[in-house]
Length: 313
Image (cartoon, rainbow, N blue to C red):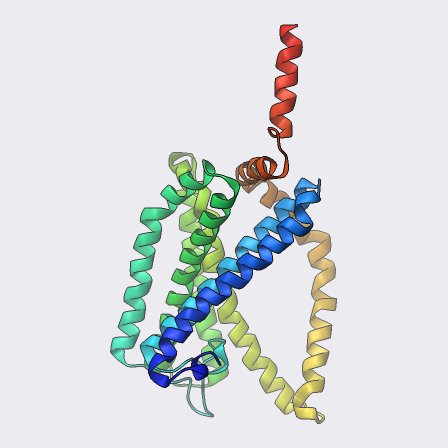
């Protein structure tokens, strides 16, 4: 839509300019949220939850917009539907990309991976000793960088798999690609588990970002698979309305089946593990929030000072 507002020759620049618009919108929304009501809240847990949600959403959406703009520059046209769904006909699996375009996307992903490996530890150290607003900016940069790497590998993998190796049934192809992506992600997560032991404890600060990135690849691959399956079911068992009824039944039925077990068993375990893994990150972010929300030192620091004074007396 943005590209149609300018000449075709300038549409690529409009796509990249839209990324800046997205960043500006999220920045304004975050500032309004903070200065209108968040700064008056005393619930630090709520502050931390909102903060993490904001940073992750900004990083995910902005990285998605950047990769779509890069895809536009590489292919000369903005992706149809703007959701990275493969544009397939009845027998195909997407728009054909040249070998040079596929190699460029692979090289881009490898280059960003090297940049991430060399810079994430320095960004993590900078984030820990910075002020609240710089901490927020650096964390957003980290998420955007890692997510761009994930989107890049995902796009290259889809192009290479569907356009070069696989030419069979579309639904089967989606399942095969999702299984391959899941296996690769599990191997990466296993490697990260060994990389974050006591011997390499300096990697713990940003390993969770890498896990989030590889999880995105697996989740998006299965989402494509489920999307195709739902379309097949809705077309085969539709009772009119363009398959709307089967889709509504599936959309309402699946949460009713999954949520009870998730809330009862998985959620408490995940919350406990998340609290243990992110204790240091929460402590740092909490200190930055206290510096902004309160005029004096953080409550913990004040308590320590009072205890010291009492001991001296």
